[in-house]
Image (cartoon, rainbow, N blue to C red):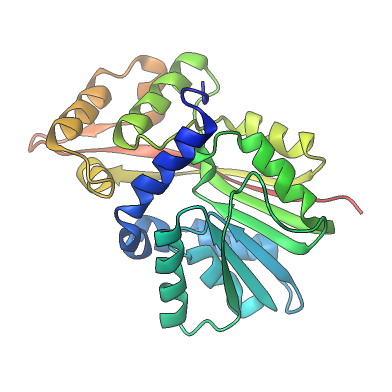
Length: 264
């Protein structure tokens, strides 16, 4: 499934893909806005003395949201160009309590129990082994601390999951694998985290805008549209595509917000 290429190859592809257009993720409405960010803040209730770690920060939107509410936030990313864009974004926003580290989400260079809060938003579907990432996130969280993840999810049925993941990977070759909500809950429990909250939600995307963010070639956009038209029932019910006569299309992306606590 996720191991269609080696870990090294996937990480190189992620850096190449996201290094092409880092500013696009700073300005992307999908990443900068959405009900999930205020909902995340509401659930976390961060405290002024907390040290927070935002993994795969992308454009830095989660780190920016957390910064006014915590003592310090560390924003990290595997892609150096993305990290630089996030640093500029937070500086332009007046954030002064952020630090920036280039690091691998599955091999965190921090001591056990170093953080009060670890977050990761719209990124783990690029990781070679998300279960390993959750293990690392749990390790560096203090007893009683929180781990919060927002990411894409797919149907529980194998056929639907495979098709939706193939659709995602056609648009973004750095896409590894998106998992179902029950699998994500299992990742948290296997890492020793108590699942406090698991909330699915959907967003409707315009195909052309979604593809343009990855700078897809015109033939790829045509193939993506064809996949929406030809989707088998399990995937069609999930994607809920709307095909417009003018040539564009829209569809649903499903995501989930999971919040876990490390036992004391």
